Length: 80
Image (cartoon, rainbow, N blue to C red):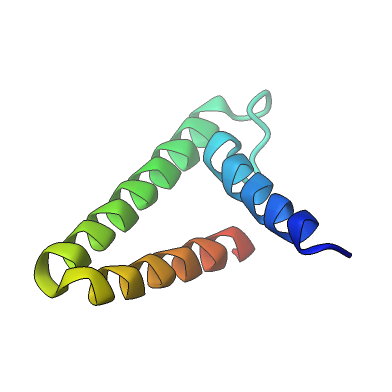
C-alpha cells in the first residue's frame, strides 16, 4: 500500500465526515439527521477556534500542536 493511498483515504474520510451524518438515515428521520449534521458542523467550528487560539496564544509551535490535537479529536469523533 502506498502512502498516497493512505493520505487520500484519510482526506476522503474527513470530507465524508463533514458531508454525511454518521449512522443516521436522512429518509428515516430527517430531524435527527439535521441535528447530527448541525452538531458535526459545530464541532468543526470549535476545532477551528481551538487552532486559532493556539496560534494566537502560543505562536507557531503551539498552533501546530493544536492542529495535531484537533486532527486527533476529529479522528476520535469519526470512531464514535
